[in-house]
Amino acid sequence: MRDLMFLGAFLVLLPLAFRNAFVAYLIWGWTGLIAIDNYLFGFMAPVKLNFIFALITLLMVLLKKDTERGTLNANATIVLLILFFLQGSLSAVFAYDGNNLNWLLYDRFWKELVFAVLMPLVIVKRYRIHAFVLVMCLGMGFHGLIDGLKFFSSGGSHLVRGFVKFGDNNHFAVMLVMAVPPLLYMSSYSKTRWLRLAALAIAIITIAAVIGTRSRGGFVAMAAVGLWLVLTSRKRLPALTVFIAGIIFVVAIAPAEWTDRMETIQEADQESSLLTRVEAWQVSSVIALHNPIVGGGFHAVATQPVWDRFRGQKGLLGFVDVGFESQVFRAAHSIYFEVLGDMGFLGFFIFIGLLLNALKNGVQISRLARQGGPELEWAIDLSRSLAATIFAFLVGGLTVSIAYTEFIYMAVMLMEILKQEVQRSLSEQRARSEVQASGLKNVPTSSPITLSAGAN
Image 1 (spheres, one colour):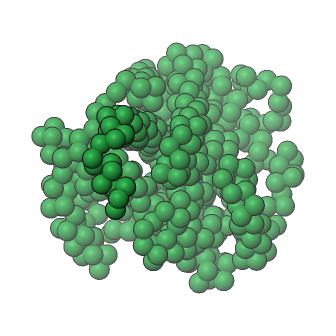
Image 2 (cartoon, helix red, strand yellow):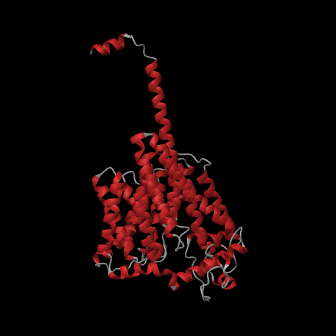
Image 3 (cartoon, helix red, strand yellow):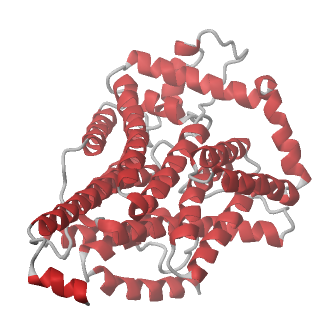
């Protein structure tokens, strides 16, 4: 039944994708975010929907099938994305032998960056920006909705385990938290009332799904994002009220197992789970020290031959004694050490620069948009929502290895596009003001037209 439903959806979406590059790009993005493979088990399972719509998008872009085609400018975001792509390519080529995941992960990596780099060509003007935010919400929000409803229907006993595409419950929890700010933005700026209510409901249900993961990292990321939204909100008192109500809501629906799990955060330094993470960080840093330019290749630390070569060495974390030496490899358990071990120090600095540049763009958007008055308040709120998503990634990524998730590169590139849209809107406002001022100067004060208007 699921396969038939997806076949029907595919037959509807396919002709839509051939209408123009913008529609094809939206569908490409949606099929990249939603883990379709986890829901199909029949004849549709082998069909690579994301690949098909990617090819259609590239064809539409090459044929210039778009009435509002954008342009690629050599801004900091584009340059950093290209450098990150080149660095990742070099790391994949010079990866350690025995790294079976290297090329598989690189294949996903380069496609995500190509998607991000192409965004300025198709996402232009406010309505397209909002359409893309909606796609982001429909992608990750779908997973939050499904597992959140399961959590509610089970009375809080449902354990959200994650997906193969996103990783285990800890990875999945952080990614769900990243989706909440765009959902809250849509709940404020959607034109129709039912869509605003739907976005708000999905945001609340997604928070329930995060609780259902029992992930401490997800809880910390969720709390950090809540505080971020309060501190950056244009209306702090209402935002603080919502934040407090959110805390009450979380405590009210959280099962006893979740509460017990969260209480162990303060004992994290005594837990073996943290020490195993530290051990993985140590090995990742050792890989980078041995290969500072290109690193060890994608997921090098999670490869047994590489782990056997460097285990027991402490690298940059020599001041920490974990007290044991694992014989079996471990995941990086951190976006920072993940990129450090995979791409070396050079890749690490490009990665951090990309994220910090996005946050800087957010600050610039707020400063510029204030010059435009109420007409650009939406841009301020959207930039803060995207910054909250990036902040969730930075905080949640301290303990999970999700450095190459497409959602973050979508947010980073969209922040750049939003800045360009604000600059364009301000230019139009100045042009209108100049035209009006010029028109007033050219009208004689004693003209018949003026007198006639006054008589009326």
